[in-house]
Image (tube, rainbow, N blue to C red; front, top):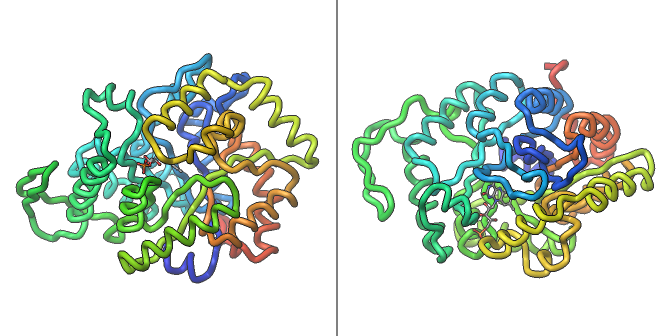
Amino acid sequence: MNIEKIISEKDFQLGIFSANCSGGFAATKIPERWPATWDDNVRLAQLADEVGIDFLLPISRWIGYGGETDFHGSVLEPISWASGLLALTKRINVFSTVNTAFTHPVVVAKQLATADQIGHGRAGINIVAGWNQPEYETFGIDLPSDHNDRYALAQEWWDVVSKIWISQERFDYDGKFYKLQHVEGMPKPYRGTIPVLNAGSSSQGRGFATRNSNFVLTSVMGPEDGAEIVKTLTNLAKQKYQRNVGVFTISHVVCRQTRKEALDYLHYYAEENADWEAVDNLMRLQKLHAKSFTEEMLRTYRSRFAAGHGSIPLIGTPDEIANEIRKFHEAGFSGMTLAFVDYVSELEYFAQEVLPRLERMGIRLPRLLKQEI
Ligand SMILES: Cc1cc2nc3c(=O)[nH]c(=O)nc-3n(C[C@H](O)[C@H](O)[C@H](O)COP(=O)(O)O)c2cc1C
């Protein structure tokens, strides 16, 4: 993923998010909810690869959110998941989501370099500086209450990983959190480094993201507030760090032939059959420890959390959804992630109906698909 090219060509990137987690993005009790088995993920990744989706992005989650379904109770570990999928796909980029506080940078540098060798340069990293208190308890460590400390550790962690990738010689590292001797790492990533995503939302988080990442992930209410956030983040990156960053947001999709069918299905899985206990647990933890969603979003978005983890709803006919995506493109976003209740069958329909519309609108360049390579 070439950030400069993506920005200059305004080629809207689409990724699939959260398919490694049971339920995906939908906290629902319907029996056909996404089980997130390995075989499902392989089918999805190969389909996404074939139809021209740009990237796959997993969630890093270590304990479920409870409720009747234990939403996100079964989660394929992101680096193992990405390595397997990179071996089984040809074109698509596959990110790993990694928690800085729960992993050692020397180990992760080698794991990701290995994954990138497997994928011949298609691995990426989504860096999570940490927010979910119960997970910290699982690991037996304290969640720093101060965002400065969370991001200071994340910065050292990333400095070590990236230094391993550029250093041709052994080095020592003397930081506040890491004191390391004779560090080395071979092989390097396939092209020396890999694309970086980050979803920090606090001022410290945004500082980290604009300083270190190629793409900043952010949750927004819609294209209007989104346009402001894109401006803020891209200006911060340019002015403070002389860098270009692309900004992505997150969505969930129910695309059907008619608007009524789409709305009925949304009602079925995310109202009638929502796992409200899991939804409330997720929202409570977000409110307590993260700044991913604003107060206003957390006050008013219970349904959006049931339907798609608080992300943008893309609900309706192929025309309506393509028009809605166009608004995010016009707002300056470089791309967005998609999630479906049944990722495989619904991606098939989305690819058939929505992707060609986006190409006709000139939002996405035609992809060089598998059969044409
Ligand atoms: C799109 C998106 C993806 C994220 N992915 C994960 C994840 O997989 N695991 C996780 O623990 N946190 C994840 N987060 C949380 C962020 O990494 C970050 O901790 C959160 O946005 C809080 O930001 P803050 O630290 O600036 O308060 C994600 C957030 C967003 C918006």
